[in-house]
Length: 500
Image 1 (cartoon, one colour):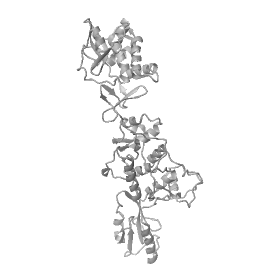
Image 2: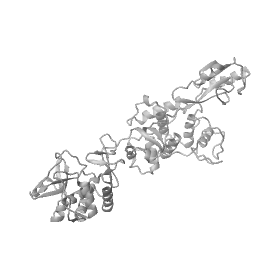
Image 3: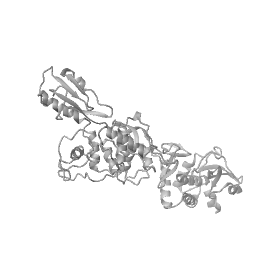
Image 4: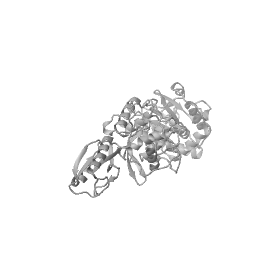
């Protein structure tokens, strides 16, 4: 891949013709004052030439290069940048660089592997670099890219654009080749004006083909330059290093607060530091941004990474992926309420704190969900005492968070309090546990917890177990009918779901 980067998007033959023309006319390339009738020869980046009078020059200089390029300067054959109003040289040509995209439209430039994963510690390949350029150099309105695009498609499209804009000219490039820092700098040098100064490195001489690209990296701050330093040009770059560097080059922020919870959660199971995960979310998601007083804010986003629908846990915190493959954030879904960070909540912050502390205390690593459910049930039976309670309207169930909080504070309560505490502890495990107020044996009001499994009601009655020393855990209909439970539902049985 070395020696493959063209510094500017110009045709050398035309540059040579400009030099010959300047010599033939006897005019130097210095910015000397010229007579008003002097003809100016403009040479564009694509080789097009145009003769013009001085009076037409300023208008012609406003002509923009083709799509995908931007003009950083009109120069004379020696590279001196011309500014309208200055004395004009005999000939000018347009120095162009590759346009990496709008500063507010942040295109995704990395894609997951066939398993939907990003291996952050592996080395970056030319395929990855080509995919990045292909994504950034494609007009958003002209691409139908999706997560389903194959690696081969991304490689072909990316390498074609790299060659089109002179970023890569090696026709024998192998997509599996690992990329060094020096090679990446050479590719990127086609996207920026040449460095203004010169730099001294211990491992790169001014005769090396990559010298100018490494100087650019020093000038832009892509490496922390000190005189006579080792540039690291021959070191292979990891995926994590690649993403962090490219986000910096593209001037993309990746602060946690700027990234929507729906996106951050898609990467929560990566064993990486927060900086790297936020950088990955930034690089892997198509989104638009606005800049406010506190930095960038995402306004729209569309991810190419989706999760399998269903419950997810981070330690004892419950999250949920809906049928679209996105995490549920700041809304109710499947009978559970999720906060602005996508985490399950009872709706009462103080109650969530009690529940979290108990789960941290009693649940052990390696427990199955069923074992966890039995553990929190036994805790509900044994940890609290009978005594007092609150009256709730027959046939209602929205009282359980209040009842559970009161039970945690007092340490004692009635049947409704026992049922509510168990409901509060079971729901973060992904069970759609609810409370019911009815009666048993036709004798007075009673409350218990329940959930539906395959359309059948399973009853959990911690207060009765404590009182009668009988197993009242996960009673299927044939068992709970022995005790003549007479439930009063707030909705039809079977209309609720469960993660069980």
